[in-house]
Length: 191
Image 1 (tube, rainbow, N blue to C red):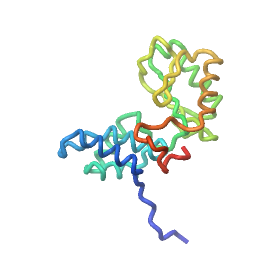
Image 2 (cartoon, rainbow, N blue to C red; image 1 turned 135 degrees about the horizontal axis):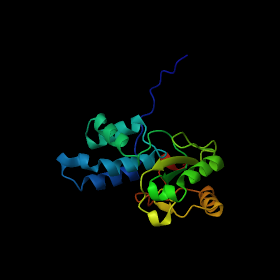
Image 3 (cartoon, one colour; image 1 turned 90 degrees about the vertical axis):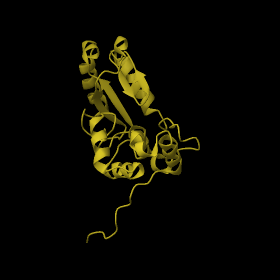
Image 4 (cartoon, helix red, strand yellow; image 1 turned 180 degrees about the vertical axis):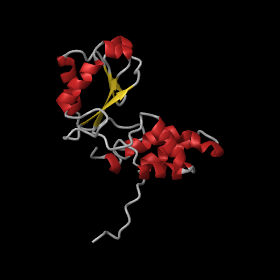
């Protein structure tokens, strides 16, 4: 028997709504669309690290734009995840300097250790998603991986890779977000 209840529409936490309002006030009402990138970042953080189509629709509603306008932006920028991700998204630099210093080997090693595969879903334990990205502007410290706002540099030894993964595995909660002064919003409390 099919369910007759409608799916629950995603909603921003009160803290996220306040931050979105603060950001939108920086633009004239007719230019509210200019807040799309920061609002998408808030949405991604608020809803488990990715922006599902329903979440993108919510962003469109909040900004007063058509959903297709949000889809165009979220699919253009690689910083937005369009499918579920692990607790930690490891963005592996794949450009020339990092490749010369072993980023291809690093990617294979991270796949072997974590069980996650680049371009696929999260690892079986839900901790890691691997993603290849363009230049992270840390060429002198190659190979480099970015996790949220932190760079892990010179990941060319087994010890450095293990230290990074150990730090991430032992992280109890993801770092607090700027609008979360009063604690984690309900939508991501368990993320």
